[in-house]
Length: 100
Image 1: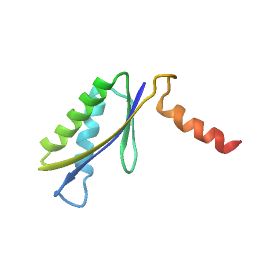
Image 2 (image 1 turned 90 degrees about the vertical axis):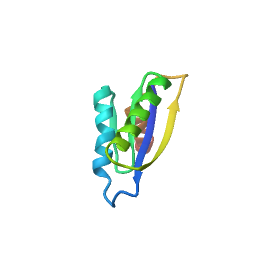
Image 3 (image 1 turned 60 degrees about the horizontal axis):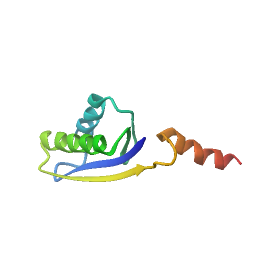
Image 4 (image 1 turned 180 degrees about the vertical axis):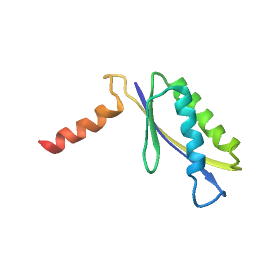
């Protein structure tokens, strides 16, 4: 499983960008991927790197289509091949270590 963290920031629009972020999230929902929205970014899971980039391109373009004239997209990809891990597995691993 590939875990992707990305943020899309429209530049020069207004102080509030939530309506643009919502357009990017609509893409994730339409693609049917598991995602987690956070205050600073969005994280999602896919089976392969090609799907990850396809979704990010669609989300990036959705923000442009919503009226942004300039968009800054940042991406982090965790492509671990030795063990199958999901988003919640990574969080659980840290929380387990905090307990003991």
